[in-house]
Image (cartoon, rainbow over all chains, first blue to last red; front, top):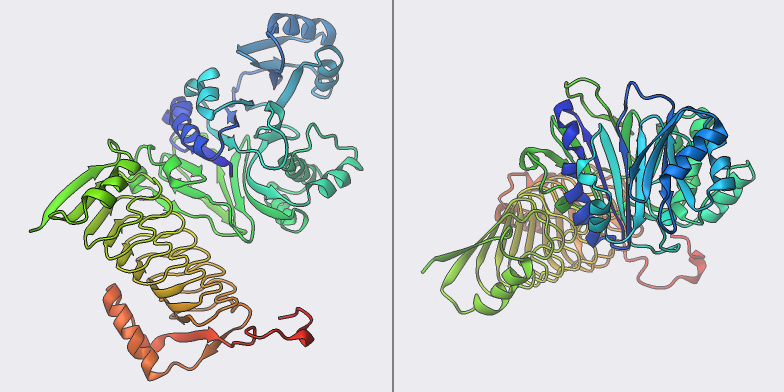
Length: 311
Length: 230
């Protein structure tokens, strides 16, 4: 089944409440996906140096100090580490391509969850409510986030198989549905030298879209091409540093509901995930149409903007 | 006797509410039940089987008033999937929009959607009437066997695919007809049926401006020469 949630803040004063507004959304969708959960939050720090690397310590007691020290020593760069339990955000000026190799060679128990200027990614096993409190999601701040609650149907339950999936920088995807041709998509991408971390169908979709964008497509164009290339049922919710994008396949048998106000755009698998949001009773609540691409941009000022909808 | 009882779903669970509706309500003096804070919850007022008026104030979730018998349920808001599914009799009215599979598999009664209904509205309809003031999504009335569906707005792709004996009326545009569905002339008896349903639904529309869609019945018998192409 699975549940998806997304929240994009339109009134900048609300950015400090991003996590507080989103935790009940994730908790509620725990009914649709109780085995694991994840969340990608976008919080651009104008003065930050280098890129953020979200790390997950997947076995045993984390020794993040040693990781940081080793990173500085081996890659010879300035770096900081924001530790949150088994999750940490490494901010480093290292060449991005050097980081995965360094981790694989020296820290095989540390997974790289995301890379980017703005993105920070959490995912783990357990009930979404538990995960939200484990990492203190309530205190998250930023412009937007997307989250997922998983009920695994096609690949194993593990932190790595939880959503969101990422590829490239500042891009992530959460998915409610199932793809029926992930293996052929994966094989075709592997022949192009793209590497995979799991056998999960959503990772195949995520890497497909990111590959199209590297080939010059906009995200919207990449999604258009995915209608031909990705077979299956899906509601995809994606985020980049600049926007949040939603699309449902032509049959649309996986649900989604949107609530828009001047203050925020909220997406959930079901309305009950949005029912607690302030002003939702007067929000523009609608069900996204099949094969329509809904794209909402992050606003840097407090002025709300209109929704961009591309067919 | 017009006793009213109110339930606030912020304080009482749907299970407690439904237990009251199933066990204590029938035979009591209560004729009206008000429900506050539905907040998208599922299965509110499902399985009713007595003459009562139920008002749900706000947006509700899936399976609202499913399996309804006799009762009149009004939702003052939107609903999620499968509102009034498998209704046997009575009335279910949604003032807002309905998500997928509204009125799925209903056997009787009247379901009125004041706004739009999403895809698969009236899927496998087995009797009764579904009236939608707005549009319906794709694959509506799929395999509908009996009863009537009225769409005052537009119908999405593949309307009435694999239709049996249900009859559909559409006031607006039809994106496409599904396999074995065909448009037929609107007879005087159709206009009469429409007038009755529109009046019962409280919708002001000209019954003569609807189109009738029914089964061509070409799928009723196996045709080996069709080579699975329909």
